Image (cartoon, rainbow, N blue to C red; front, side, top):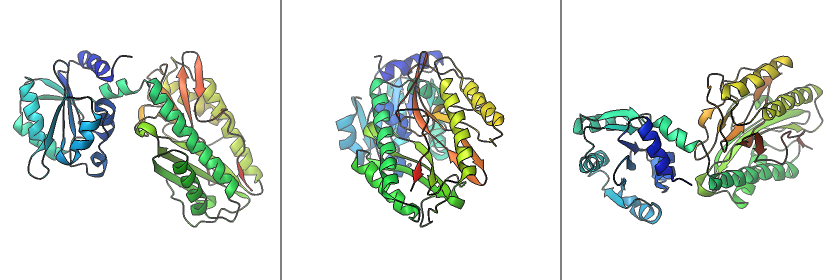
Length: 370
């Protein structure tokens, strides 16, 4: 398979870029193949990767990260600055000078570069023509490699199975936090490296988009919704959601649940290479309208990888056509009767259809805590 760097070079040529400068944690990991945790925890501690269209690449990181970078990255030119004493931007300018790029068109992650670092860079290199390289990087990352598909599949199934084990261990009258702690324990014990996020809302908390688990009681005769994910092998993420009935079934909630399931299955039936993101959104919107379900969400899914929301989003304004070996989370959401109904699964796009990666079937069935 063509290397990530070579695929990025093709995008540079298409966009007349002489080099790409990577700063974000996800793109650093993807293109430099080194995981620098402090890029997220301490964003001022820059790690910078310079990927020229011609010439040798270079990586710049804080001296504290030297052992990690030296042991992981494929890049041979590695430079380390002393934090608080030396400027990473000055190191970047040195690399650009050595590569003869001081008057060039440079793609850089403008959405990640802070204003103070941008001003410093322009002060040291005023003749640079900086353009945003965000889309170029997204177009490389959107087609998943076989190892990425495996990492995502494994993480998704560990996450699903942890929920299923948790359902068997609790009953109506338990608290959200009791349920959440059981699920989290299984996620970590069964192979995930970390919990990325964990949203849970039972009963009146169900409509809250990002409710955290609390001592709220999971009452029988009601329902709950959970949306959660972890960090798996290679730092690839999982993202999984389910609506669960609590105790005795409530007919009005079951009716809404079943209708949303019908729409869910219909969306999957339309997934294939060539269909656009907006077309899938319209399938969902039309299905909700046909069943008189309220529908106002801005998207019905997203790509997934090293970040939770990757390009492209399945929104009504995204006309990008799906391609083979893209991976998506499909997640229609309905809020009705003051309760939220939400399913989410991972799917691989194929030439003439799809493969569900996070479950054995598309229809999640009626889930209950009894």
